Length: 459
Image (tube, rainbow, N blue to C red; front, top):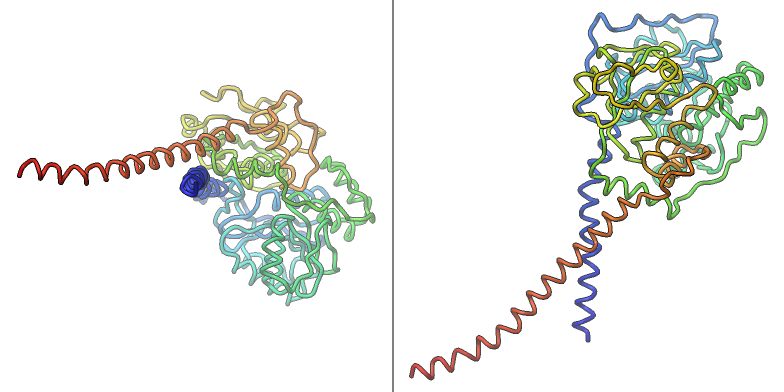
């Protein structure tokens, strides 16, 4: 009986080991697509934009980029919110002038380096925004520390950018918040911080920390409200189509946690072996939040595809409020490897910007006027993949789930079947090995008995 139990347990163990081994191989590949190699192209000197002007009569907002990358939504959503006021100098700053990859492979040219900003501005920026930074954070931590020591009036972190502030010692014995999933690690690495969950942002005067990703908009509106007044903040929220903002009201939101439905992320990272290459057509005048929505939802924590930014001619584009982005290639070079083409921007949709592109097939236009850009993207994810994945993506963005297509598939059944088939293959393999071992065990005594008889006959 014990032998039989042992055999059953071995088969069950094999059913677990094979899918886990497959996941262990696939997950690193999936996570690398969040900042896909080979990285940004170099920018020709004649393509580099002129340094932005700085109006001395306006407060300056510096949005920090890391040399190895930053989160697209953490960076571009606050940028557009502040830019819409027309009351700030809004700049992106980085350790070096080289193009910086944002989530999914959207490459941005920083407005200024840290040194450039110091030469242009005789005092620290009035507002510093720190998003999630990819790779080494030392240069950013050092710069933020110096700005705080020099009297920076207000520093705001977005999402797990709070970890940068904690590394700089700015959150010690303070209340702070961050992305609900990121706080699992932040509580371990920075126990000196009073981490709180279930709040849009925590405002402690000279430092504001926001919840995850798109909640950087709420933090930005808080800064606008403090600086320019509630009417200005309400106006920006209306222009962004950002619902739910109420100046002076409570910032309490539901506290998120992991649930069984969130297994879609693990399934996608582990078993989406046929992850498509998705071309993203960049066009002049596209909104910054529209751009962020075309990259972050399909990559970080969802692992739905490998994004490839293109323009018609391979040249850089300028966004609605003056940021410069460079594509990974022109469309003609990328077309043979692209499985699907999406086009961000309500303006690009109105003008059918992808029309006439050879080999583009049916381009998907993500956005329309008078709708928050991430709504269209979440609906596209539901239609293209399934509603469970779209729901998970909204949760990782800390954004309310919009109305999703009723005809969409409810669950990633194809990925689930792959998991089941791998488990079945492990069980079958274990069963075959056990059967072979059992046959060898039975055959061995028979061979041992045959030897003396043979010898007797010979004698």
